[in-house]
Image (cartoon, rainbow, N blue to C red):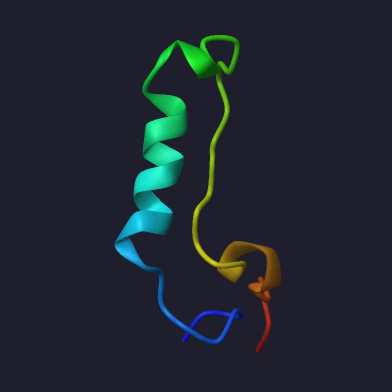
Length: 48
């Protein structure tokens, strides 16, 4: 389960894709857009 407490809805992923596809994002280069409900931000790297 994601930190938001639910899985993503298809339209949430689609909105990120639709932002990146047209000229509206033409100045966005070399970036990673993580659409994961906060999972990467809360992942405990090296915990053990």
